[in-house]
Amino acid sequence: MNITFIGGGNMARAILGALIDSKITAPEKITVSDISTARLEDIKNKYRVCTTSSNTRAIAAADIIILAVKPQNLDAISRELVGKFSPGKLVISILAGTNLESLANSLKHGEVIRAMPNTPAQIRMGMTAWTASPAVTEEKKKAAQSILSTMGKAIFFEDEAFIDMSTAISGSGPAYFYLFMESLVEAGVELGLPRETAIEMVMQTALGSVSYALKSDAGLTTLRQQVTSPGGTTEAALKIFESEGLKDIIIKAVAGAHGRAREIGKC
Ligand SMILES: NC(=O)c1ccc[n+]([C@@H]2O[C@H](COP(=O)([O-])OP(=O)(O)OC[C@H]3O[C@@H](n4cnc5c(N)ncnc54)[C@H](OP(=O)(O)O)[C@@H]3O)[C@@H](O)[C@H]2O)c1
Image 1 (cartoon, rainbow, N blue to C red):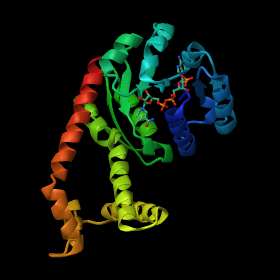
Image 2 (cartoon, rainbow, N blue to C red):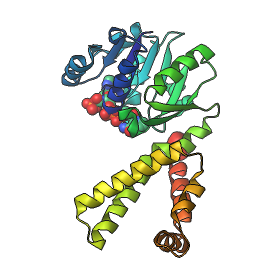
Image 3 (cartoon, helix red, strand yellow):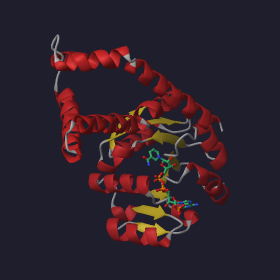
């Protein structure tokens, strides 16, 4: 399986590193194309893959083309590559907010997959939601699932509407968790903890809480209740979260992200 990346930036490197570690395909069967020769040199040295500054050359022998440029670069790529995607080539796009119809229309190619990874993909702890156009065969979907799973978890959705929903939960999700953690650090500092100590405590608490929830058979509500003794400290905090409407704020914020994802998709 020959795999080509168009764009050799952060996400391409995350997928590239994961692919090579997983041994799904040999480095010499991977080609990366980018406009920066310095970036290509660096990628070649680090991953031992083939590199080129010609997108046309990069896709010529590719079975799977991973589109990893910024959404604003899609027009230029399409103008350059239109008509060069022969039948049987599979395009996997990770462009945020660019729907299957726009991809297929821009590239004039029917076999397209739209995937939405998130930043923890950089350390193979990502959550990717993906969907495929009707022209993508089951065999190609299997190949896509194994490629995307190298970055962490990957969930296929038949209905593309779920990609916008996933964008609002797992795509933007890391930022929500970081905001909560930043706020907890500030709260600790306000109480008098040294900042470094507060950061260490918050990081370990987040890591421990998620790891414990993953290992435990109890659901999230039970795990929360286990920490909440009547009249205790946790209850005092949770009462304030509740009276200030934290859950409603989160639901509203996620609806805002979802609305924006749908809007961008229509552009
Ligand atoms: N980062 C994330 O967490 C994340 C999550 C989900 C989805 N995504 C999506 O992933 C895509 C890539 O994001 P990224 O963070 O990896 O971006 P990035 O670091 O900017 O990588 C894009 C690369 O493509 C190069 N490029 C631009 N035009 C090109 C062209 N015509 N031909 C070949 N290469 C070209 C860029 O070069 P220049 O920098 O010189 O322009 C850059 O090296 C985006 O569409 C983004 O929406 C990212």
